[in-house]
Every structure is written in structure tokens, then in C-alpha cells.
Image (cartoon, rainbow, N blue to C red; front, side, top):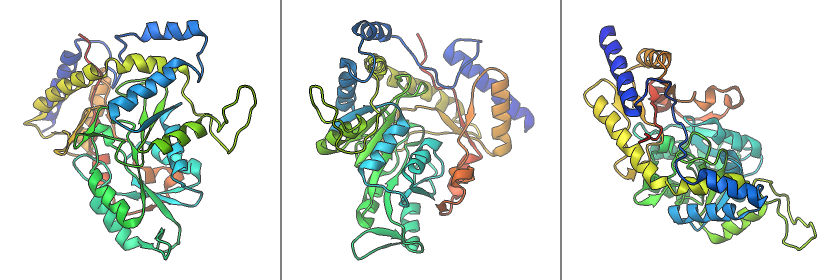
Length: 388
């Protein structure tokens, strides 16, 4: 058995090196700059508009808006700021509760912490590894009530449950129709953490556009990058206008006076970052096609093995941001991580479950059987764009 595992690991390392045509170190997901990045950055510097005022900010918002078919897209400094803004706009307040998944990147829960709100951790479904509608519905039926005003409350503490915030894990869309039905039944708001899913579609609709708000991230390791940055996708034009207002310090327009009509955030994306994003958007379709070819090679390699390659759900088209496998058990996972990284092929486990972190250890949670299973077995494989 051990010999078979060693053979599989060697073959995987050889496959990855063949995909990327190098014997050098292979990162998990490196950015690719093959277009107008340098030209647009130089133009921005020449213009002197390098901060949050400049043509590329508006241009980048428009490009994302058109690509996702959302009503309005608002650029921000990073994904966490975007989540924070969305939670603020739906009225989440200190002491409120928000249902999310324990299998997520910490930014999802950090944004709740910054609001003074608390997460409720519900299990994932075992195929796309996103928030499970059945587990969510079960938790609510056992632990929540609708009060006389129609507000959803935690039965024991009477705390308001305000929203459901699933994440499209590794770019694989969650079951949004079912979650939207739960939101309607329990008077909850849906915020999609779509940080990892630019270019992913749920039943032909781009992720982040079915909930009241969706949030994208353009960190250096995402499908496209602005260095650091995020984008808030707004289902309504009205919400988009308000989002732009509060992310720009809530300053009222005036030729020279400084008047701010409410507490706001200084969350606008700088023009330098947006310039990078505009150049990246020009290559997005090519990037997505490139990543799909890599995913197909991995899927073929693992087809007859003890490892399960994670494919897009039947109801969706995924961007395959990070190619992922399910290992047979924890020991196999650890051996794979050790051997690949020792050979200069970067692989990573999934994040530790949020309730294992000290700041969220006391959070309410349901049964997390599938989350714990995934935590012990998932491994992300190199997923950068293959350079020609």
C-alpha cells in the first residue's frame, strides 16, 4: 500500500511538472501578466491619479458589471472590506447572528467579527463543499423561530438571525435556489461570498448575482488580480448607489466643501489597482479556458485512483480556481502534502474549520460531519494559468 502511495505521489509530481513545463518550484496559484498591465500602470502613473479617483476605477467596475450581468459593481480595497460593506448594507448589527459554513477562509468570519456579529456554523454538502441547504434548513427548524414581527430569532437567546452567507468554495457554486427558498421562508438575507468564483456560473447565472449582494476578491492568488482588491456586486441599482456612497466616506458631492452625511468607510479601490484589473479582465476568458484544460488533465489522471478529483456540480459551471482532490484519509493527505512540497510542488490542505480557531470557538454550530471529513482529506493542487 505504501509503495502504491509513493508511486502515485511521484506520478502526480511528474504530471504537475509536465503541465507547467518546469523543474523549478511550482506555486499553488501565481498571477499571470500577459497583456496591457504595464501599459495601463504606466498610464496611471503619468496621469498622477493613482489613488481612488481615476478612469480605471470606473472602467474596472463597468467591466465586472458587464461580465457578471449584475445591476451595479462597486470596487473596494479588498474582499474583507467588501464583505463588511455588504453586511452593513443589509443591516447586520452588533449581537446579530449570521449563518455560514465552518469550512471557509477566515475573512468570511472576520467580517462578521468587525460588525460585532457572530457566526452560526452549519455543515457543507459533500460534493461542492459549500453550505448545505438541508443542514441549514434542519438547523433553523430545530433552533430558530419567527417572532410576531416576522424576524428570525435564535430560540434560546432571542438574538436576531439576519442573513445566510455561503461561500462558493474553490469556485464551485453552492445550491443557491434552495438557499434562496430558505431565506424567503425564514425572512433572511442572502449574501454570497463569491471571493473565489469569478467566472463561475450557477444555472447560467454568474455567482454573486443571485443574493442581495455578492463579493469578489482580487488578491494575488485569485483568477485575476489587482494586487489587492474586491468588488461588491449589487442586485439593485439603489443598493449600488448607496454602496458607492458609504465606501467613499459618505461624502456629499460639492466643488470644495467637505460634508459627510453618515458614517462611511474609506474602502475605494485605488486607480493603480484598478488599472491592473482592467488589463486582467481583457484576458479573463482565455484564463478560464486555460484553467479548464488543466482541470481536465487532473480529472483524467485521478480517474481510476483512490483519490477523488473535485468536479463542478451538475447544476453549475465552475472556474476551477483551485483544483482539489479528496484523499482516502488523513494519513494519505499528510503524506501527499509532505512529499509534494518537499519536491518543490506546492500543495495545500483546506483551511482549519472556523470553530477550531480561538476567536470563534464558542460560536453556535450544528453537526459538521461533512466539514470535518473534508478538513481531513482535501488537498489543493497547483492551478496557475499554463503559460504558452
